[in-house]
Each structure stands twice: as C-alpha cells, then as structure tokens.
Length: 430
Ligand code: NCD
Image 1 (tube, rainbow, N blue to C red):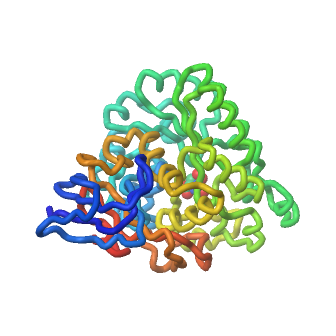
Image 2 (cartoon, rainbow, N blue to C red; image 1 turned 90 degrees about the vertical axis):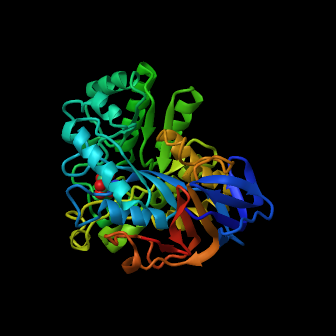
Image 3 (cartoon, rainbow, N blue to C red; image 1 turned 45 degrees about the vertical axis):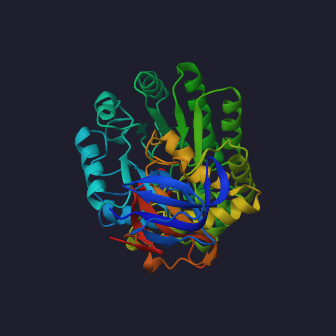
C-alpha cells in the first residue's frame, strides 16, 4: 500500500478547523502536522480544500437484492464514494427484505466485493416489513446489524412497536422509524397544504408524520429504548424531537438534503422527480429543519438516496414511486444552505460524518478525528467549487435527481477508504 501525503489542506474534524498536512500509510493516519513529507509517498494537493473524516450515510437504498434495474450495491457504492461517503447504512426494503441473516450477509459481502465504501446492512423491525411480527432481532444483531427499520413504511401497530422497543434495550440496537401513519396518507402524492389544494391532488398531512414521532417518543420514554427518527420533514416534528432531547430521552434524528432545500411548490410541474416520501414541505418547514440542525436537535444529514428507473418516474404523479437519488449531491446541496445559516464547517461536517457514525455504531472505523492511528477513511472536498449535476453522468444506475440545473457549492475531490483512494480528482478509481 502506497503512503499518501494530503498536502496544503484545511483539516476539519472534532479537534477543530486548522491548516495541516495529513500522512496516511498502512490504512491509517500516521501524522497530522506541518510540511509532512515521506519518500516514495504519493501526494494529494489539497490546497483550497477541506480534509475531513469521510461522510457516513444513515439512509441509503441500494436496491440489491431484487431491484438491480434501479441500483446495485456496486453502483450505489460508487455514487457514495463520489459523494465523499466512506460508509453507508443500506436500507432493508429490498426483495427479499433484510429480515434474515442470509440477506444481511449477502449485502455486506457484495459491499466488500465492490470495495468502494463500507456497506452496513440495516435489518427489518418486522418480518417482510409487513408490520405484523417482529423480525429475528437476536439473529440479526449477531450478524452485525445495529440499525433496525421498516423504512418505506412505519410500524403502524403501537403494541408491536412497544415490544420491539422492549426487546431492543437488551440488544444494543437502534430502532429507526419511518414516521408515517399510513391511514392518513392513502393515495397522497404531495404535502397537504395550499399548493396541493390549488392543484386538486390528494395531500399528505404533516400530522401523519408528527403523530408517529410523538407516539415513538412516548414509547421510548416508557421503555428506555434508543430511537432514531428518519427523514424529519416538518416543523412540528423538529419541535417534538427538541423537547424529547430536553427531557433527556435517547432520541436522535436526521434530515435529508432535499427537505432542507426544496418545497412543495416544485410539484406544480407535476413532475414525479419531486415526489418523495415524506413529501417536500413548505419554506417554514425548511427553516425549522435548518434551525434544528444548527442547534443540534437534528443530529445528522442523511440522503435517503432512493433510486428509481426513468420509466417508473415518468409515470403520472399518482402512479410514480416516491424517491430521489442524493448521494452524489448531498454536500453541494447542504453546504451553502447550512453555511448561510451560520453553521461552521466543523458543525456541518459533524452532521455528515461523526454524528451519523456514532448513531450507526460505526465510530470505531468511521468519522474518527484525524489523529495518528485512526483508520484513514477520509474525504477531501473543495468548499468553494460551484458546479451543476448532469443526471446522465451520475454513477448511480438511476438518475432521478431533483437538483439538475441548480447551482451547487462544495465538491468532493478525493475519498480514501482504509487508506486507498476510491475517488481521485473527482473520478471513481474502480
Ligand atoms: C423510499 C424508496 O424508494 O425506497 N422512497 C422515498 O421516497 N423515500 C422508500 C420510502 O420511504 O417510501
């Protein structure tokens, strides 16, 4: 393994934001300091760039097994590396769903074969994500699963969710809920509000999310379970999480780049590219989400990368599946919004890297401060680079991005996984 000197950059991690070179060898950080040199080492010129712990995505749909026409573990891993990610949590709504050791082992092994980022499978809360019987938690924990979710659906039955939480406390699990009371969202295509009434289409009320956020916070209070709220989208949900944290409950939450940047007004085009679950909301919700990230109520930025083939997304709004790809654009979308809101680079990188790493229990390997001995899972990005995404050039097998034609700021130049470049000068190495 060739040693690498990352020279002339600005190191941003838990220890702050300062100019420093980073020497990487044998898969680990060897030194951080001034004018580091090593004979025979490769050099990465990081002038003008941030050098940080690699990003960790808590919410990636890789589609394999079962929907390889939309994405594979390899194409999704490549998209992740290009977005600066060194680890992703793979969502379990595959076919078959990740409710058994066989599926979880398959996903992890395919991630290792692709070798582009660390793929950590999540497991289902209920068998087949059907919401009826609990999945075999013990077997899945033994297989290395830490995050459990039925994502794509929330667990509707409060008694079943209570039992899941009771079991989870003995097993060092995190229950990650997709908060949606499905009785309130049947047939819905977009956020229930003024825009939706004007368009005359069925709406998806904020309450459908907030009722379940509230229910799960109260169940966590009762059981002591560790819960994580997926893709928060409403101001009311942010406030519920804020109060739960103030009460000292072990609750964490994430927000997606699209909910931080786009509103329901996009649906006036009737373009299903903008259809997503939970739906794009209002400017007031965006402001609450940004404020939630800034004050630490929301811990992490998570992409909810949800690839869908073009012929599915070209269907009419009520028939098209919800979801957007997001791995390759997350930094470029979030950096300007959060910087403009006054967040420091350290706090922004925290939400992309070490905070999600801790939630997923990946913090031994990922999101580590750049100190000697830390695994060299790193990203080098230019925070000033302005660019536009070209959907056809995305590495993801599906190109359903809502960000085409929008100015993005912040671009990944290099990603290192265990000391080896997965992205070199903006190009995937394999
Ligand atoms: C997700 C998908 O496509 O798997 N879609 C999405 O809009 N987030 C699942 C889901 O949450 O509906």
